[in-house]
Image (cartoon, rainbow, N blue to C red):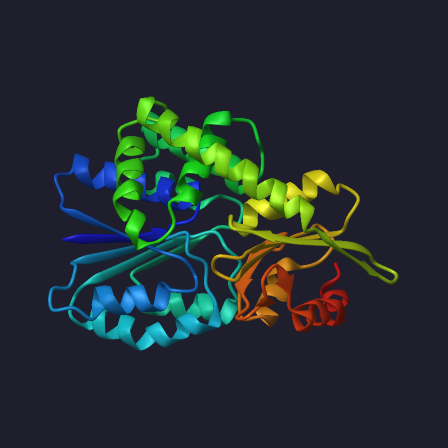
Length: 313
């Protein structure tokens, strides 16, 4: 039995899993699909490797790494001692000491910040497969903000909307469709009608609740929130305030923050808050960020104010 666990919030995560599923289905291997994000990854891995029936192979994709994940090193070692295999494919920035430890513990750890995870997995499992190439192309379009393919944007909207274990059935359907080369059909279109309306409502709400911070000798920071993914919000803010230096989107459903900037090291700032990600895009969780409805806690604003210059590029 093979278990795949991937980032549940974006096309690169589900695209990675779709390529993995396509490969193992072609080889008549049983594969079980799981989903996580950085704030529940440790819990999910404990569930998978703490059960009575262990998978023969665990494949992790597009999940990034933060210091909390070090808790899993002992469990990974115990799992490997039972002759099971762990493979991890990623493209997030990871500290060298953690990379060295992962390379020692795991059977395979591939991390390349210049490719998205789906590209890395395509090159490893199905380098010449036309459908795997298409999945990787769409995944890169979203992860590197290329905005060349409307299909990729639509898939991202559908995936981002279906967060949480209650939507796992839908995520598995998306993975199955993509693994078979289906990126557009009536089912997708029906989902999009509802989702686009939801996105429009939440985008308008976010723009109505924008907070602007002017940092001396640096520039403007734009912050807003809504019941929508922080990545979507930070992109919206960037489009709406193109002269600002930092864009901060807060998903008020989960108190999760996404940073987007070419002027600070977003990953290093996210690490300050126990998060992680990429140099120009990163995320973290901030508990109790809303002490009152629709009012960002001033303590968070002050922390951003006091620390952002430290991570200036």
